[in-house]
Image (tube, rainbow, N blue to C red; front, side, top):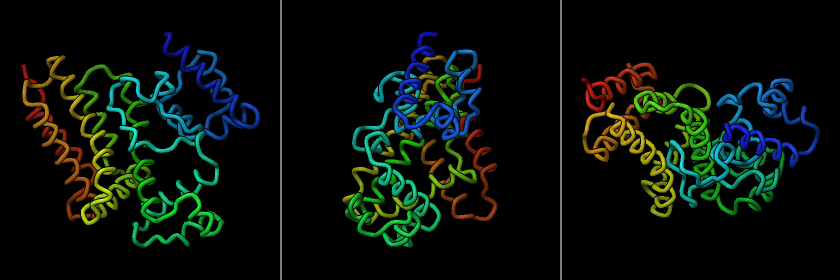
Length: 283
């Protein structure tokens, strides 16, 4: 496929911009050098996880890797410019390291328990260096939100672009949003900090809504595609999207706050049941 040829070309270009030989690039993305060589030659495909790791390491989006543009029309809504993270190729290595460290600390400890001094200590640098890149603590949280948006966007494009059936795509989209242990739970934790701050700090609401709107539009796009494919009922797509995303948010918060009897498995079961009862067309 031409798309695959272009993908390989873009990855080769990225490798040339990176310091060190190709094996260093393979090590950096956690891929065996032989597998990387085969993917670049076209004898094997990059897996979704590998595309995500390439994008993370190189500071690009998976959408750019697959389609040549951050704004290319794809299976998921594109983040608006205000909600986009600064690409790693467009920022210094210290800034990228500070952002990733701050993001992890906020996810683990909570925004108000993380001090600039904690970020500096974890990075092995000074508070002055942190303030050079992020003048205020709110700036740190804003960039952590943008980083979270990029992580979700990359994951969804990488995982969903090969799934044509809208029903299966919606189920996979739900799976990619469940607050399972590890990366997904950390992303949910950051969102929880942002929800809390935007509730009391009007200055944060514009960025929050720009960021959340991308997820909302992705669900709406998937539902409309399912209606066009005649696998979903002819309901008001906006109304169904509002209902489904509200369920996801509420159930996710219950899991994250360890409500008794809540779990990722229960959340999945309830969401699948809603889709089966209220969205899926039964012939």
